[in-house]
Image (cartoon, rainbow, N blue to C red; front, top):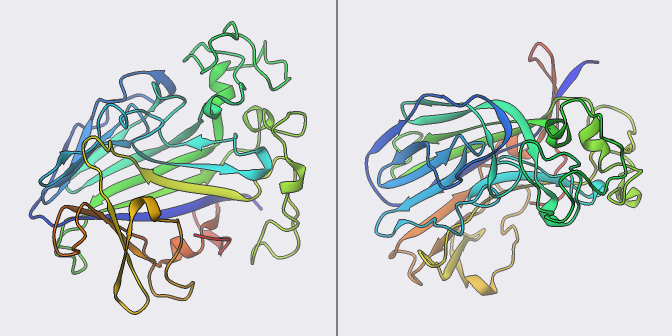
Length: 354
């Protein structure tokens, strides 16, 4: 069966009190480049929802490098405007020690993935494109080639790595080493005035699509390397589909982790309070440094928690930013099988925790 796997499409919504709507930005001008040294602080497209505004970069996979909160201004500065930070998503898996790490934004803090972004009224769409591997947080040098961008290892001579694979004649050189088996697709959309939403609200939807057969990129983290963790292989990769038992093989991904985060500079805005909506509809409040990551609502709840960060201990006052995860099929069943003609073969609820 010839299938395409859409891995972990997630929705995210940013909420804030404000008014009106506007979308601005250039038409797509960037040719695709898996990694290119560029300025991560450049905002190439913007999207407004009332007085809330985000700015993204087509030099970094459409990652967010600007977030304007009414009364506070842009809370992202020099610390957060890097391709490894800002607002973006990434995935890892435990069987390859978490270092096989396709990301939205690029290869290093200064070398981003250049892509096309289409700006239409109220929406910014990131055109599907291959995902770059992150440079392993400086812990595992897998790039023998550095013809596109330098890695984080200043003493490797620019032509050595740790994967033990002879890549001296590798077609594509560094591009082959850092182009993952995944594609990325996503969009940002102004939702104020839609679906009964009366406050500024930006929806973020994205997909990681497992499109290409495992090749030289994933092999750099395979059984012959120090990054392969055989004990992390699952005895059955599926939950409901395909039917049968399918144990994880060395070049599958096992115990996958998908994360989306947005990082601001605390020197610009440092919210001290976190609010959770509890099952009974009341708000639970905690100071940020006391917070632990957890899901407040059970798996059968009609929606996931609305989490609000604020600089006020009064939920009716002060600038605040909220995140809401809709309890929708694309979030409940993050694995979707498709044929080449686009028809859906199956969905599979493979979440272990949220």
